[in-house]
Image (tube, rainbow, N blue to C red; front, side, top):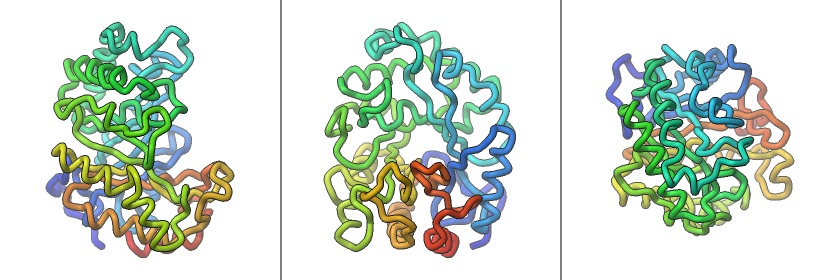
Length: 312
């Protein structure tokens, strides 16, 4: 498919279509800061059309990492695609930082500074903030063990950051399936006025997608893809899939589909189904042994890589 003409009409949540795909399509491609833009461009060239969205993360050791990641902003300044940044709600090496203190407004100045720095780099209207992603898991400092507390912290962050960067878009992101910190992530919903996008992270595992029955567990099972697509639509929000991919690495050994072209096909069908309300999807092109999802540079999954390139 030919790339869209410059100035193409933005899709859901204002994500401009540069790829010419029926939906906005992007990638996460880890690597040294100085190489990231070139790597994302190379991914687009490999598949035959540019990426609409680049997913990335800033560090999260301390408040400076969260509020002032100038290296990240310099990396992505003056690039045409929408930038999706995973932003921690709390620093991970500050033992005094808590969700209770966030909800009480003690960190409002930090979040106001966060917005100021984004705006000063000209990025406020180009960025989607994945605040406290995968909060329904149990592996992050902001996990929603108290969903009401999570929701109040979200509202405080949103209000403070929007006071200095009102053009931001906010993505409330879960992982597929029943949660570990909170079974139904909807209990941590902060309110329609505080969210622009509902995101769902999903990979080929638990169970591996090897046939229609296992795909239906992903699609229509408890808190599956359709559940969150319907939830987004019911709240008048765009849907996103910020992380997806095959997962043949050791992290899910025995519970993944390996180099799985069938999974690529089924996810493409889901994106096509949701294209009218799909803000974007982004393939998780990570080569680490734990995930081993890479389709390009390096190609670790030849069958999945070939099928992805055929479709995209």
